[in-house]
Image 1 (cartoon, rainbow, N blue to C red):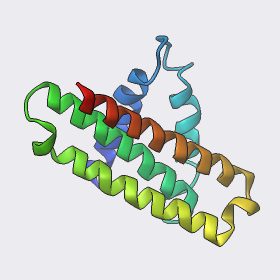
Image 2: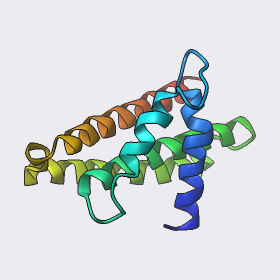
Image 3: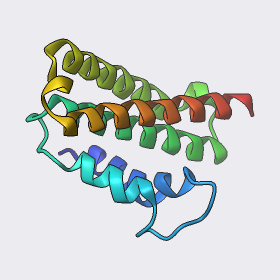
Image 4: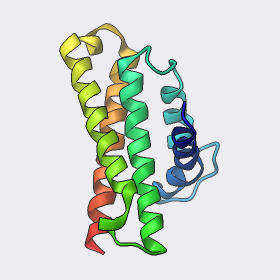
Amino acid sequence: MSIVTYIQFRHFFHKTSESLLVVPTTQSTNPFLCHFSHLALGAPAGQSIAHDAFRLALLSLASVDFGIKMDQSGPSMGDNAMYATSDEQRAESFKRLRACSVAGIFKEDPNDVDLGIATVVALNIRDVRIALSQDK
């Protein structure tokens, strides 16, 4: 895992996950930490397309959060490289999600179905956050 990926995961688990909730919770009851972290760490990188798609979706969401926080301190969206990084991660996540569907992986393992749903949820949250940040 590269240092950039490591930093993005840390950012998701320590910062982004808190900002996704309307009602403040402790880390032990935050559903994004309790459930998403277990799903994301279920298989090493490169061994499961479904896990890789989900991890890329989380990285994409963390990149958007990084970008939004950077925008609050300076450059406009056009100057912020985190949005381009997020777009690339989102596209790669969708590509792997489609590969899971084509290969029939979702029919074989119920855990992979959970990963597919979690991937779509994470990417949807990412898209909503992008849309809301552009409206400001």
